[in-house]
Structures are given as structure tokens and as C-alpha cells.
Length: 71
Image 1 (cartoon, rainbow, N blue to C red):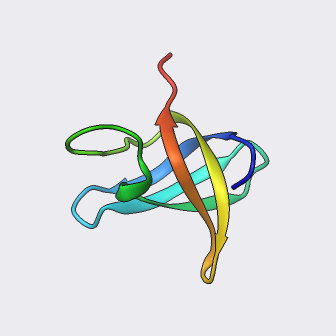
Image 2 (cartoon, rainbow, N blue to C red):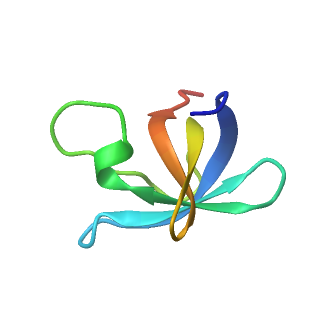
Image 3 (cartoon, helix red, strand yellow):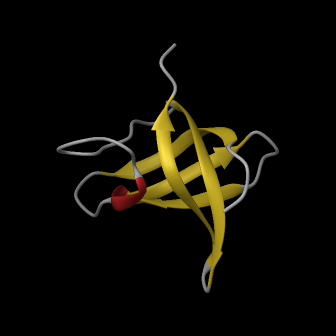
């Protein structure tokens, strides 16, 4: 895993449990609900600020350890 990166949620499909986060450097990263930190129903909303680790997968970069940044 790499250091934590900040970004904002580009979109997240609640029904399918995945979406994309836009990193501060402008690149998009895939996010799956199972990589969101928290108990119970894990969901992200468009525009939310988040911090996360990035790991390379066979399909490209993927967000792990995703935490919502409370503003």
C-alpha cells in the first residue's frame, strides 16, 4: 500500500457498490464498497472528500482504506 491520498467522490452507484474517486492530481481511482472504512452499510456520496490508499490491481489503480473526511 502507498501513503494516504486525498480526493473527492466523482460518482458512486449504491445499488452496484462501486464508483470512482478523483485524486487531487486529477486521476480517477476505482472504489468498491468493501474498501470503505466503517460499520454497517458503507456508501459514498458525490462530492464527498475522502482519504485513501491506492493499490494497483489488474484493472488499474484501486482505492483501499477509504475514509470520509468530515468537513
